[in-house]
Image (tube, rainbow over all chains, first blue to last red; front, side, top):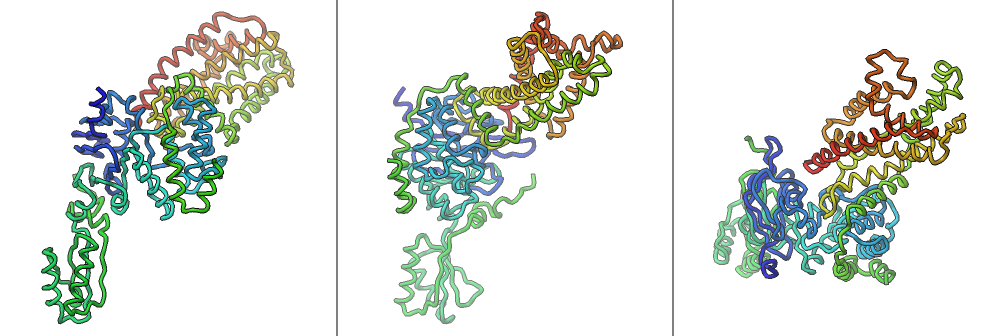
Amino acid sequence: MGRIEHLHPAIEISGLTRYFGKVHAVDGIDLTIEKGGVYGILGPNGAGKTTLIRMLATLLHPSSGTARVLGHDIVSEAKAIRKLVSLTGQFASVDEDLTGLENLILLGRLFGYSFSQAKSRARELLDGFGLMDAAKRQVKTYSGGMRRRLDIAASLVVRPELIFLDEPTTGLDPRSRNQVWDIVRELVADGTTVLLTTQYLDEADQLARRIAVIDHGKVIAKGTPTELKHSVGTRVLRVHLRDEKQKAGAKDVISLIVNSEISDDTDPFQISLQVESTMQASHIISALSNAGLDVAGFSLGQPSLDEVFLALTGEPAGKEKDS
Amino acid sequence: MSRDIQTKTATKSPGEAKNSSIQSILSAGTRPKEANAFSASVTFGWRALLKIKHVPEQLFDVTAFPIMFTLLFTYLLGGAIAGSTGEYLQYLLPGILAQTVVMITVYTGVAVNNDIRKGVFDRFRSLPIWQPSVLVGALLGDAARYTLASSIVITLGMILGFRPEGGIPGVIMAVLLLLVFSFSLSWIWTAIGFIARSQESLFFLSFVILFPLTFASNIFVDPQTMPGWLEAFVEVNPVTFLVKAMRGLMHGAPEVEGIGVTLAISAGLVAVFGPLTMYLFRSKK
């Protein structure tokens, strides 16, 4: 029995759907997520990310299909799942009228701690998340970043095996976003599995070991961030030459290094191509210089979510499909 | 120890300070034996009391209504019905107390439903607890509000000349019976709150139900003075039984039938609307 416990993946989803009337929020998802690390669900607004998370967190019944979380069925074994997972929803899932301290004591009590145990646990968490100064203030006075941190702290009152983070950094300033990222990395280092949804490729790239891209309730691509970016033609290197006559020579030099297609820009001074890594890009730049070609400038672009979607689906992110 | 971490957060990069403490936090989060249904309900009741502490404005309905109702009906009807307000008050007060609290139960439904629409309920619903405790606790917290409303009505009544012959025990028993009935009645509003399209429609529906229930009762006048068809309705109105029982208890002549029927109706309301509310709660989108 104990061995079987270790064998099952964190999440196994098969043919999962959820319809709201005519809207197919989740439209047949099959996905297996192994234990450990961050698994990213990437998709635009309305792709079905939150609906999927809510079903996995046992808040919503599927219309059809099945899913197992840590080996338990999301419908028939909901209570077993609730003992093992934590959910941090897209909208602050803490009570705004209560103080930070009261919120965490409340959850501690609900998990079965005595009042004094719950209180000392709450203090530990507030301390660790840098919220001790705000412990006795109502949550409605917190900044977005503080609220998020409290929200995540609330998910850790009792250590979960799996934590769902639904768009944890949406609407945060860069500094708060970095703080949340640090927290997520720490959770993972400690062996917790994190399922994270995000609209930002950058975020998925920073944190996730594997990513599934979903759109219109379906998985349209999955893999490691590198694989995904590669399939998208992730990085676009643009080289600007000082002399347009050197363009042909430059193309020859580049084609010796990479065999990806070199496109002729409308700009006669510019060449652009897809590269696999920053290293390869710098290799190309130095090769051009060594060949005596005059590089006026270059840029290396990260694809945006829009570009990812454009590459994967041929249409911009979140575009309404006629059905 | 805690000071130590605080200083670190202030001086070093925030990420670094947090990393070390988050590790220790995680390892400290051992799972206790889970909270039982009773302690989870009490915890949610505590939450409701904390909300009153932080948002005292929500006590407006349980303070203003009782004062308004008691003064208005005592002086409006007292002279006409009983010849003097002092005498009428002995008859009216138990009833006006019942009417006040029964009317307030609607706000409970509205408040609980507003609360449920917020993100925090997603967290509660994802916890391994007895799910109805979320609502039971909220309603227990409301019992505190009803108690406050009751104290206001009784205190005001005493000032105006109400003299309960049943003494303090009688008054307490009457209030307890009222709390049981109101707690049970609240489940109707929590259930309707899930179905109603808007708060306005919930309020409208509640008035359609509550106006006949409270006015077509024995609260203001003796049913024997009414036309036969109305008297027939009043005689089967649950509020009539409640008020009969409360009058009996307050005036030192407990009336077994009224108490029994009130308790039976309360049990019935919970048995029907409790599960219905929970069903709607669980299937919420």
